[in-house]
Amino acid sequence: MPAYKRVLLKLSGEALMGDDSYGINPLTIDAMVTDIAEVVQSGVQLAIVIGGGNIFRGVAGGAAGMDRATADYMGMLATMMNSLALQDALRQKGVEARVQSALRMDQVVEPYIRPRAIRHMEEGKVVVFAAGTGNPFFTTDTAAALRGAEMGVEVVLKATKVDGIYTSDPKKDPTATRYDTISFDEAIIKNLQVMDATAFALCRDRKLPIKVFSILKPGALKRVVMGENEGTLVHV
Ligand code: UDP
Image (cartoon, rainbow, N blue to C red):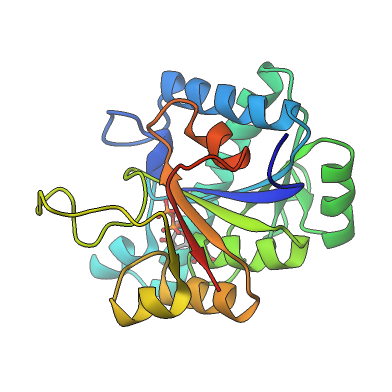
């Protein structure tokens, strides 16, 4: 039995890259969608927020001299490409999916409409939220916290390259150990980076737990949803 009825999965754009240095790797997205399909088939309602860092990040455009807000809109368009790729891959695995965008692109995807998104999930469709929050100067982590709160999910699943939150960087410190659970307050005191500060504050305020787990570990998503000991849970 799944441990949750409704969850929001935050995938970074980089998660789609695989071993490539840019863009969307077909084998990587296929493996990811296999894991997602299993979760949906177990009856869990699923929404996804996907980043765009594999294509474009506003901060990079800003650093290169672009107007930051314009660069951020480009970043949001990058998330749209990833969302369409994800929708397509899900459908090819037999999972119905709908993209809803925070920026209107009516010929291509639905606009974000909260009750409609909820209805899609109730019907067993995966909703992919594109274009982040629709506002520059924010991130898709914040979009994940925002949409997660709006959708009334029980947990935000933050997929990363590391299998949880460690006492220190496990790549640099061999004595680093993984937390099974940690409170929001403790994570702040220990200055552990879970999500960006805006996203973290929103989740904490809404008492919305965050589960950090590895997207690179096959089957980890399923184990997380089944409530097994996988990753780190940040709780109130
Ligand atoms: N972005 C934005 N507002 C949002 C979400 C995203 O302006 O609400 C832009 C921002 O430029 C960001 C880019 O979209 O760099 C891609 O998102 P993000 O960096 O969060 O992607 P990830 O790191 O998860 O791949």
